[in-house]
Image 1 (cartoon, rainbow, N blue to C red):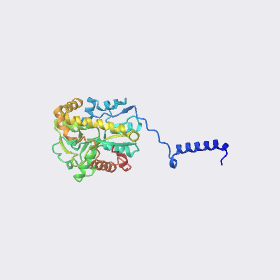
Image 2 (image 1 turned 120 degrees about the vertical axis):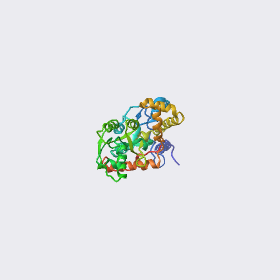
Image 3 (image 1 turned 135 degrees about the vertical axis):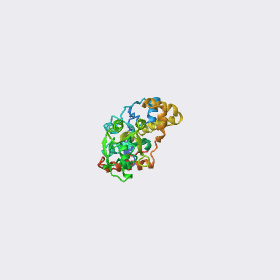
Image 4 (image 1 turned 60 degrees about the vertical axis):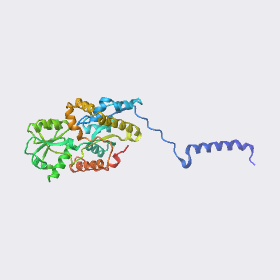
Length: 325
């Protein structure tokens, strides 16, 4: 028999054992980590060029802002057109979502250690990216051999130039590429300072109206994939934020389908084009945000281009940087 004086000690021991079991659980399980706090402010880029109709619709309807207002989350839309500057801001933590980022910029940033995730496709628009010339004797990429071409280096347009030359049996050094932004490239071509220009968006129509013609577009060469990218830690800790953003983005795409005339008017006002010009260009773009197998292939092809031209130093596995939300 136990002595009565031992009972209090046994009771204390049982309580300690129960407490210990409750803390550790079976097998010594650790307590659950606290959930990450949802941000109270989001910074999402506004990029309207070359013809980003869903973004222009959003600026007019405030679809994204209204969605996040439901949880008192403030949204700001810095205008950062440069892909490199978008990814720099992402890396610095001063930007949360790149609404429209060139595949080249996303891959270069990832290969340089930027923690980003591709969460959707903004657009595919091979017909919107073109090599153009004013000289009527330049009809094919082969005719560019030994000539000067102006355009933005390390971009989709540059990739199309390399692909077009290769298709005609020429190496990249068959032409002299002068790196400059699209509008001055068009001006240089129209003024006769270069033989051809790499042109996208509304500048294609501007060049055509000034007497230039399209040598080739990206069709059949490059899909011209523009992606939606976000900070990796935001995707990991707050996937609901990304889901809500993509849902609002899809609302803008649906508005384009249902209210085409109004959407074209918004776009004309934002770009300085006429609604008729917008109607000509809009069919060039596929705004389906779903990441498809063909998109992943195109991004891998883009990495091959970056590596072949020396713009990217280290090859990476793109799979960890693609997050299907």
